[in-house]
Length: 263
Image (tube, rainbow, N blue to C red; front, top):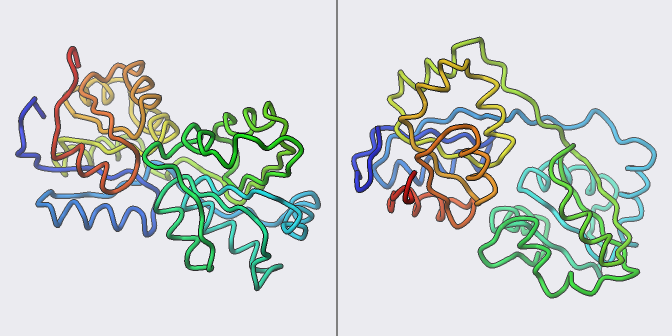
């Protein structure tokens, strides 16, 4: 169990989807002296093929004034589609990334993207000055299937013409009943790092009510107040909200572990 002021964390669970983002966070935790274990709470897969409308979006990507990538995985899957049609990126487009990891992914394609300073979320993107006056302008949001609709709804309210290109889907990890709880126990996990509200929802789906109750002694670090609220609603009370979902912010929150009053 993690208590206030306790810096002797025995085990930390990283729940990001498999890939470079999870690997780099685990490496950062290990370098800081933590025992990091990775167990994705989301499984990602590319869509089998584009439908006619999606194909049209990619073929006419140069017609958009603004293109937004909402995650590093949107870059991973989305740019694989874009580069099939555009081996050289068109000019005159404003590119955006929800965070620094997403922006780094775009740099590999020669794209310099604008990012929010610290609020790496839809709300952070909407606060960017470049997206405030978009009436009559075309915006393409590259993302996974489903997810939040805050960004699209607000841009439409501001008068933008918004399209969404879903380039991958999220799924529940293939774990047998009881396996997730067994791993958490075996790895002696003290703190779980959650990367999204959907990850939290899958955590609850993968645990029985009795297993969820046993998890009340475990701490959670979450990337936003929205996810913190969802975790509290799920009955967890040892919660610290990081500044955002970046490696640096998560590690800082872990090193400065202080559950809030009443948590």
